[in-house]
Image (cartoon, rainbow, N blue to C red; front, side):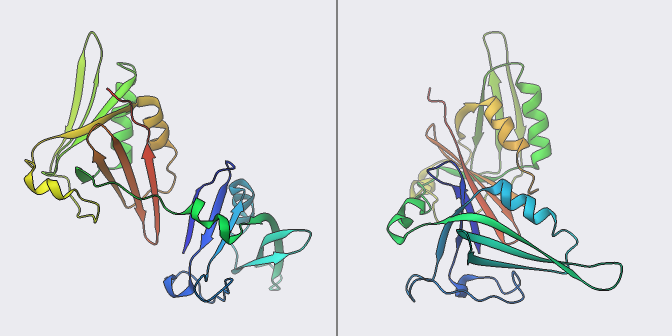
Length: 245
């Protein structure tokens, strides 16, 4: 599976996991060899804009082959086979420069350890949340997102003149390994939440072109707001900066 996440240099990196972890329906054929049997992985940095431009030519492709090659520098080479009106296919090759990361730096790209969450809830569709947040942004600079373990979520904005809140009920509370063991002692109807910059929250909602099948919001009261965006074989995690009160 391929993960994409920010790196220290401000670009993005792709991580190829061991072949045994690859879903069988992701590639019709694949061959991969890491640096050792116990480290069958390849870490590399790649500019996502370069990768996107190359993939746009593959929208009508008959086949796409991705290879890690070494030409003028290490490259992620995409061989795109395109159909033609004459019946003869033609192949376009895109060589995308990458930086192969040495093993001593792999720990810098490890997935961060998640805290024990106080509440975890499946959010309503992004379009609904975005519409509500857009209407609230003119009322205040900060948005409070709260949820409980009884399927309730609340969006609230307040100012000196007014306080406005929107409630969502009958939402799903999924089980996560990071659920706080103290939740069994907490009243499931108690709301926990955190404040965020409302414009950054809207920017996060507007930037998700993935159209995820499910969005999970996990909260540590007044400390952490973490999102899981799930779509088929792809999972993206995002932590929202918190405004401490």
